[in-house]
Length: 212
Length: 212
Image 1 (cartoon, rainbow over the protein chains, first blue to last red):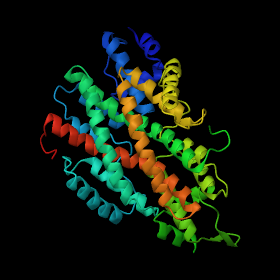
Image 2: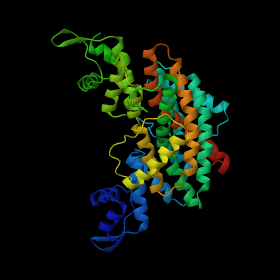
Image 3: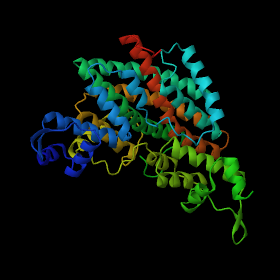
Image 4: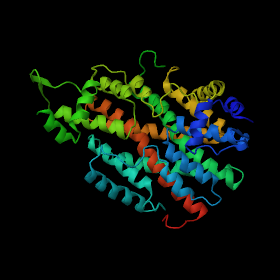
């Protein structure tokens, strides 16, 4: 199909498709003339994935490029790629005091150690967790109990996530499921968490106005 | 204190403070002359909170303005305010087909109904959950089992979150804890989830290279 048809099928405007092509988020079509390329169903699928990762996952372009490269890699390093696709990027967090982050990192490493988590020393998630922990403390919140409870919950979620990945058919499908599940899973969990928070809050503090 | 001292104490550059003042994220200081204002410890605290909500929570300025207004409101509507502070904003999700979102919304409403969740019909979290669900389907993922499992997990998380809020001392502190816990909690959970995913993946698929 030509780019106009690709645009129609994927529901993405042509200038946006051209931008993704330039940014390396979409593989080039097969050239049929010097100015014209042909695209196929894989381009439609890839476009839908890119849109969702950008729009729902709110990932930076560079992170999506890495994720897609892993999907196309015959021997991808899934751990590393997914570890880098954290919702809040690790680099450049200047809102949190570096000393507090270092102290929080010791707590996160201790937590992972006590629970026997097999997580690389250099995994970006360790640092991301430490930054959030330090941010909690910086705004005066005592997060000790919550941290252990969240760690329990995270262990449960991860078993569900891995089962989700395991339900995908081929090896190729498993990596795809890991990417989609990791990124969209954060957003799904956050939305459901808001719903259940409202429920718990309504139970505890009573229902107000037209909230229910 | 003057703005230079406020900048030093909060670790935020003066031009950034002036920008926050213009955007209404920080209340004006007490004018001591036509060109000079005096700030106090509450400004330091507020600045730290704004930085963390922007940097870790990655919330839009307008959302933070609403959250802060609620914190300053003697009779705030916490449900409404927190519901609007979802990590991915509800409006303008053009990556997902509207018909799919409507179908997904029916599933989310059914889920909430079956579980007896007290959640307002107009709660933005319902729509956010529907959009993510539709996004999962749009990229070809079968998310039925995961949805129920995540709903179970969300119920557990919400009880922990409410307990966290309950541990705050005064009523003022409870709202503050709800804001901080909701926003930073998403990021903490996402980071811990990445760690436990890596752990589960390492257990299931073996450890690779220098990952551990």
